[in-house]
Image (cartoon, rainbow over all chains, first blue to last red; front, side, top):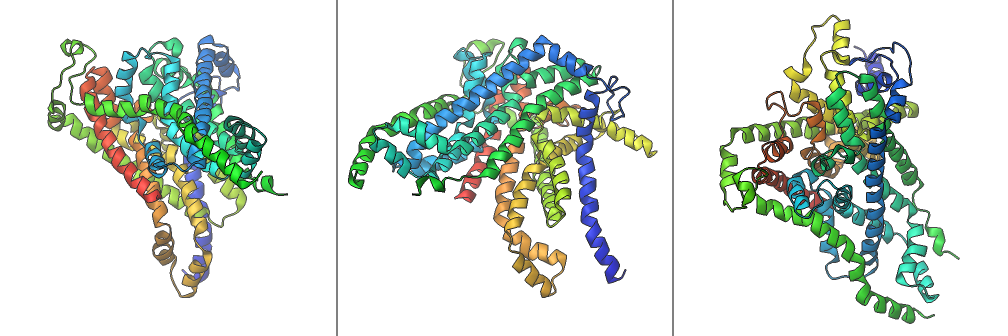
Length: 277
Length: 295
């Protein structure tokens, strides 16, 4: 092999390897997309027999499915809102005040962000039985809020650190309370940060299966993730088309959230202008 | 208004407000997060059960759960399975594949990077139960992979029965690689190109540039990423549960699945908790290292 051939191979090889990886990654995904519009979907990826929207129509028309999607939205949305509100409140003194144990508190928070939730679910189940929160949608929301609070506090504190305090002080001088200062001055300047936290908590719980699986019992309380699993177990072998359509619909909020998060992250923080002039 | 007056306002406000601000989130974390962690330690020394004699009366049984655990051959199997799953899918799979993708993508055409990046990210964005379904059907007896093999004239394989561990490892690689890819893309962008160029001028081979310059330069990123990926993989439940249910037999029963079976299928909550403590301790140790690496 001469040097020239070598050079050509080095140029082509990365493209070949990456293309192969790309094909391996896309095949399983392609199946779910194609099967969802196939009138006679099989387990294997095939060209559709006949293109149909019937799978989607059936899934969307089903009241049980509508309910499961609504419950999922309430859970994840409720969690995201609570995490942002409580997180902003907690982040404020951590960002603005000199507190004695701030550093160790923040390190504890960081430590808690990485603990595996799976490991505490058995005691949480027992706790929920004894305080009558078992099989309760709001109980699940409370647990979701608690488990993502460390992440929320950590992120919001760091975002808040980049908001200059001069603006807020000006508001105080004009007679605003600390609360009003946060609501009218600090929070609006942290919109990208707030959205990032809301999006990540939302999609984390939207995709979660284990927590609702342990904490909920009656099928009418099931969010979309559990409903899909139930669907998978009951009819999975029979009706791939509907199963795939349900999966695609269920994955859409996660995809949308991801795209939104990219928007917020690329915009960054144009806050410097706020204190000029 | 002078800055003195502003300072006075600061002082007046901070004296009492910080507590009210922190209280709601600390309270909710104490009740629903920290208390359950403490309960894990407590329950693991009890005979807590959902049904039967012991359900009526909670008793301290000392180290019985732990003695049982060390004697139980199923525990050894699940620890072993967990280690294989962790190494195969997280430490090696996601990290190495993520690194390779990030490295190969460097300096490639933008459109190409976008397409490959989006495909890999799609697996990450997809919820785990959908991932399980996609890969279940991919590896199924009449699934896509077997259709391809049949098309090529190769003997088909019952993947989910013959090599179940491999299928869940590949599924988790499919689901998680994008995270490592993003982390390594950012890290590789930080490696100054002058150093690489200087090494090439001095006659270093590609392999030497990689092993002597790039990898040492991003060493800290590799450590942090390794811990994060391991922590994420340690808690994986839904993906395995929906794909194989821990089977066939107990060939894909990792610790989370084993914990679930003991606690909710056999109703032995105390024993299940002892197993979750094992998970928790591994998680705590890794998290401590993670926090140290972030300091």
